[in-house]
Length: 424
Image 1 (tube, rainbow, N blue to C red):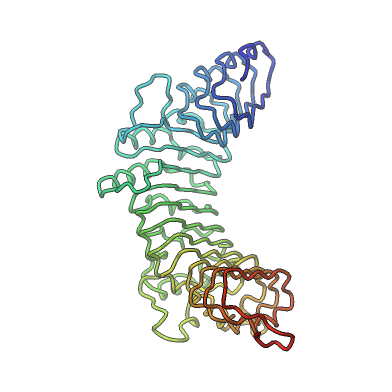
Image 2: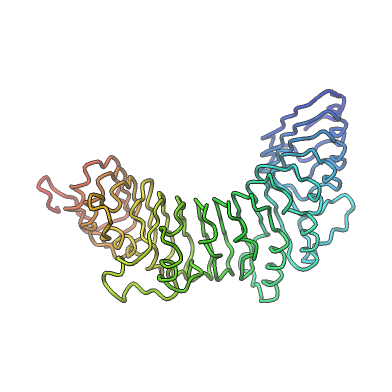
């Protein structure tokens, strides 16, 4: 507990109360510290509210409140702290209905951000509402004028198992439109957004390098990824309605759109919990021809790829230049096989020859290691987990001469090679 007498430290400029789990409230006397410039409260997990008169800390530059998960709202008048550079999290009042209206004069709405144009770094906004009234208030926050913000995280309350009808989905879409950030934004995260469509302003974020869409269960179409030329990291998680990633209908559209490889700066791609995702393009089917991999676009800089719980995904760009990691969990091996077998302009280069780590888990039809694995001359780590039909590791395993870590777990029928390279 912070004593009320702390207000007597008139010359205090820096106060760090981080990771004090027993703090639920701060004494209002703390607002007498007129010279305070930095207040650190991160990971005060039981903190439920900030001092009512926080606006009196007129010289405050940094309010670090990351990980204050019990915080219920922000105090009215926060917007008067115009020197504020750091505000990790803004919490919209819990229990608010779709109108977005606040009735407690001590509770600040999102429009408190209106004049805080010196904010920089990361800002998370939690417990967002939805609907026309909410969108009007949120528009007054003028996120578009926050040119120094690099990472914006927008979180709506979780609605697990709660049906979202078409009218509510439209209300979410209206709200997201009102939260347009400055084009300088580098990272954007949308969590528990329940609209069907993404905002029209997304393609304007031409310097965006990181995009996370998490538990956005109603989204049917991802934005035109070709209009985000700087994108380095893309995470699509829990998009239950998503069937195709590209806004183009077919492979040819992506090939004709640019002479450069697809998403030429993308380094990390995660596709997790996408049960209805069928492919990257709507009109491409891998079964049409055996050598279809020859005409597929490829990721030129992709170093890390995670595909988890995407059982229907069979068609996507190839990834011959992976270096860091390939993770396939309850996923098809089709794109992996196509990448291994593809031909390249450089005859001296073998696809995936720079890859250092592979994890295969829950691959129900895997019976033996792919013969093409012998080409993975840089592979150091191989994990194979819960592949019940896997019977043979040989002869492919014997050619992985750089292998340092090998784990086989939950593969009850697998045989280990003897010294001659035969299964035992």
